[in-house]
Each structure stands twice: as structure tokens, then as C-alpha cells.
Amino acid sequence: MCGIFTVLDIKGNPVELRKLAINRVKRIRHRGPDWSGVYSDKRAVICHERLAIVDVTHGAQPLVDKGTGRVLSVNGEIYNHLELRAKYLKKPHDFQTASDCEPILYLYDELGPDFVRLMNGIFAFVIYDPRDGDFFIARDHIGINPLYWGRDGEGTLFVASEMKALYDVCPKVEVFPPGHYYKGSEGKLVKWYEPAWAAPGKIPDGDADLEALREALVSAVKRQLMCDVPYGLLISGGVDSSIIAAVAARFSEKRVESGDTERAWWPRMHSFSVGLPGAPDTKYARKVAEYIGSQHHEIEFTVQEALDAIPDVIYHLETFDVTTIRAGTPMYLMARVIKSMGIKMVLSGEGSDEIFGGYLYFHKAPNRVEFHEELVRKLSLLHLYDCLRANKAMTAWGVEARVPFLDPEFLDTAMNIDPAHKMIRKDEGRMEKYILRKAFDKWVPDEVLWRQKEQFSDGVGYSWIDSIKAHAEKEVSDSAMANARHRFPVKTPPTKEAYWFRTIFEEHFKNPSAVDLVPDGPSIACSTPTAIRWDAEWAKLADPSGRAVRGVHDKAN
Image (cartoon, rainbow, N blue to C red; front, side, top):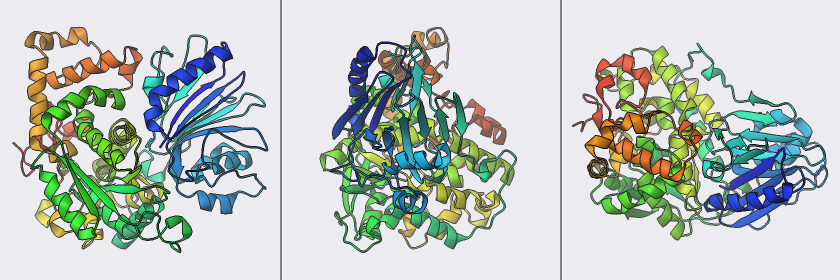
């Protein structure tokens, strides 16, 4: 993972803008602490902060095409880069690195903007052409890697990996939308990621082929083991991360990019879990690690340590969303320990719940049509929630999180299954994510495979959420809460916890447009207004914890 900061379509003084860029890119250096690079001319400044994962020695950026002079700055990993080189590049190119990102320059040269449809990876990048000042910006299919943009008062365009680099430069900062690209000379956003299963009114009718589902996920995990540095596995104790870890362990002894012909550079798998002492997830994570044979590390934190970290977590995550901060804080603390051990990349289990309907409120889905429509809606918002959390909590300490469930090829396989096969039927013994669990029978211990979902912020210890609420009760007075609508007329916080988070956020980011980048906080336990139709009682709930879904969660209180 890396950090990019780019100044394009320069209207002001290019010398002063270069100074500004070098100053502001420091704010995202945590994303790429290994090297800094800058390219500049009278029409653009391209800055890059590198986290070296592939071709550590030679992959520094910005990269310059020696033939065309185009300049590339990428935050990303292109998992099928070897295939792209062999299959689609027809002209001779002067490759300078073995980096997975360099082919982007030459694919753009030969195929034009639509080449992004061929890439399997996570990315946010800018290509600049000094010959005419034109530029090209693109972001991956789901928005796994963050990207923001905005213009200053003179009309100069700024693009950056995180909002914190832009909020005091641009009067209005916006999210660059996932699955889109933008060509400067054409001046319009183009939606390049349009899978058939996400089309309005489209309800898939494919069979639940468990073997095909399993093979697709195994292939996705194997692709994402592309790495030249020590890597690890995040095991929460739930089924999703446990399956990813189990698959990865089967490929740990060979180097993936060699076609499994060479020994892996770092063959011993290290796994990590995080929680308060006695956390529900810890013992299950330990069982999975023992089952797959990983060297496991249990990271414990105290409530006070986590509460003290929340201002930093909000700064790095750039959100005041309650669920994201609750879950992001333990992940942020864990990332620091992971980095201290020399690990630079981890595999994580985000995305499964949005693909298979794993959230507990899906128990109430009335039919296959609404079930699928809700999956599509959840996936379309992942860049504002779980992808944002996983990416920014980890990159705060220079660690890259990869998410195999969101691999585009696996998405096509899983999302083209008839949603009727994903629906929860307790009377038939079909719990959440039944077909996923069934597809990986015997890959992880049964007590984990068939364990009911815990939200990450619950699984690290039930007292974590209770402690945040108690602390917020002390931080926010009753009178302040009564006047919340006056202090925060836009996206008014509904609870003292939300009020406290919002206060910290606005201390960090004073630009009013920063608030627009954060989605409205969840007003019900299922975290989606759509599902209020499924159970009218949910409209009365303000707690987004999975435990609040009464009658569904085994430990609902």
C-alpha cells in the first residue's frame, strides 16, 4: 500500500504548488514509509510515498514511460500483472522494474482507458502526460483503496489517497467514486465496473455450485499472496477470516509468482488476533491457528489504551461513523504490533458478509429479491465502511490489508448464485453464510465453521462497546446532547457516543465538506435503513451492535 498526492491542471504558481505538495504529502507518509518520490513540471506535480511489497529494490515511483514520457503514481497491487504483460502488451516496452504496477503505463499506452477492466487488483492511480498536460485517474472496482479529489480556489485539481492531505487546500473535497475513471481532456467520470449481477432489476439464478465457489476463493487467495516481504493472516475467530487463513496456509511454502516452482521467501505463516482479556474471539482464533499450523500472536489491549487511541483512530480513519470507529480501534492497535514484528502485508476477511448476507438482520429478509438487492447495496457502500476501516487502520502503521473475498473474479462467482441459496432458514438448519461454510467443510474446526457471527467490535470483548458508551456519558453532558441539533445541524449525532466521535472529527477536520464524506450514522441495529421494512422494531434502535438484533443474536441483551 502506498500514498499518492497529485497536483494536476495547474492554474497557479507551479513552484509554490510543488512546495505545497511536498508539505502535504507528508500527512500520508504513514501509508508508504519506505521511500518518497516526486515528479514535477509546469502543469503537474506527482508525489508518491511507497510501501515496498513487490520488487522492493526497483519499484520506486513515480514511474516514467521512457517511450512516451507519461508519469504514473499508484497506490495498489495488480495481482494479474504477469498475465497482463504476457497476454495484452504487443509493443516493445522498456521495463525498468519487476513491479506489478509498471504494466499500467504500457496498457494505457496500447489499449487506452478501458484497460482498467482487465486488471485484477486493488488500486487508485494517476497517469500524467507531459506532452499535452492530459491526465487519467482511476480507482478499483469496490473502492478497496481510498481516493479523494478537489480543486482549490484557482481551479487546480488535487488528488490524494486520504482526505487529510486535501481538507485545508480545497474548499470542497469529494470521494473519487469506486469503479470509475476520469480523463482530463474528456472531463467526465466514466463507470467502468458494471457487473451484470449489480444491474437494476437483475436477480441472479445460478446454482449454488460449492466446488466452483471454493475453487474461486482459493484462486483469489493464491493470487493475493503475491509478495516479496513477510506477510501475515488476521484471524478474528469468525468463519470469514478463518477460511482465508486456512486457504493461505496451503500455499505458504511456495512462491506464487514462480508458478509454485520456487520455495517461498518467507515460508512460516504468522497469524494475529486482537482482543481484551477473555475476549470471545480469542479462543476461537487460537483454535484456527493450531488447526492450520500458523505461528499465532494474541494481541491484548486494555480499555484505557483503546479509549486513549480513539482521537488518533478518528484522524486516520477520517470518519465519525460509530461502527467503523468501534471496530477500527482494536484493528489500529493490532496493526502497530504487526508492524513492530516486520510484517508489511496481511490477508483479511472483509467482504464476505456483504456477499453472502452474513449480518444478523438478514434473518428477516422476506424474499430472494430483497435479499439480493440489499447485498448489492451493501457492496456499493463498502468503500465508506469496512474497506475504509481495514485499509486506513492498517496503513496508519504502514501495513497493507488485502481482502480476497472482494476479488472481482470471486465476486462474479459468488454474486451470480441465486440469492435463494443464501437466505437464512433456521428451521432447515441453514444459518448465515451457509453455502460458504459448507463449501469449506473440514478446512477449519467445526466449532468455528458453524459459529454465529460476532461483529468485530463485539468479538474483541463485549465490555469494549459498553466502556465506550460509559466514557462518552462522562465526556458529553446532558445539556450538550439536548442541543446536538444546534451544534451539529447536519448529520446530527443520535447518541452521546456519536456526539463524542463527531466532536473529535471536527477538531481534526475543520473543512465543512469533510462532514459530507462520512455517511449518515446507522439508526438501527442492522445498520441499514432498507431493512426497517423487514422489522418495524428496528427503527427504534440506535445501537449498531449486532448484539442489539434481538431474537437473532444468541447473546442479544
